[in-house]
Image 1: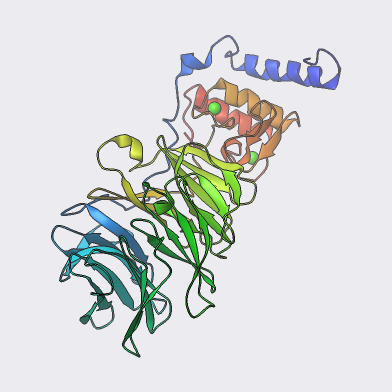
Image 2: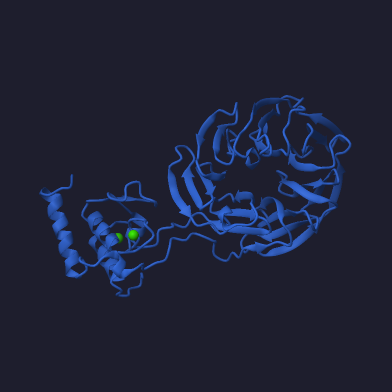
Length: 414
Ligand SMILES: [Ca+2]
Ligand SMILES: [Ca+2]
């Protein structure tokens, strides 16, 4: 029930008087239109989406060199793209169809699975030397993915068989795992003790391999998951993500589902999870899955038609999301507050409604929130959006500055 008397009502009368002073109370928000366009968070400054010579298969970020690697089947090359600008710097030719890739822990070696050739290409990123290791006849020629276990050992997957453990020092090759592995496994490290495999949608199986046992046995299996091939693992190795599911690495008990998510990607600090949906990007806390940002427009989201999203990666600072979609590599800024200055109620428009909200906040009738969207848009304002004066508090000065914006009186802020 709304307040009709007492201090709150008195304050509301003062607010009405304030607004009336500007002669705007009777005017609807629509009269003023939108001062600012829709909230936009992408792409990062200086970035132009990359158009690759062919569809990409895998995406690896090499932040040490400030580049991304994209494997390109048709020209049999690995594209090297500048992470800051999106410029295609060069292509590295490989002797086969490049599939899954892995950047070694040293940061100086790129492993590239070669489908159709039954081999792994090892690219020394310091010297640019290349060498090739055959993984047949133990595996088929359809090498799908490769993962470095340590500087001497690789795990290699083809579409159908157990994995192959390649010891590059001892020059040995050993089949590991078991014959029940599903089709097209994606390999991901999960902490020091585990490797996870996520397979293609036909079975969509997750498996955990115990690295502490020399036989590398499969110790956990879960099936019929939501796109297990989109497997991601939290930095601490304890949480696995499929397209829309959050699971414990150990045993695959489900922690949470995120309806509508097509990809779930944890940030390197473990604090956030980015959910890519058909309509945009949501940033959530990783513990309680509370929204931090919702429906950021994506430069390359899967709703824009054409090729499916093949890979999604976030760089370690958590500020940029890279999306490989067909022959396009896109980047989205995840850190920009999507609420423009003045949009105190986080609805994407700057109107007289925001002025009223800021006045209410200035007299204690609303609390401030550090982020959009607001948990309760009727009792909160976004502090970054409401604080036009930049002094970290919301006062009547902010309301005055905002009113100037809304009525079209220019100031430095609008
Ligand atoms: Ca607004
Ligand atoms: Ca202020």
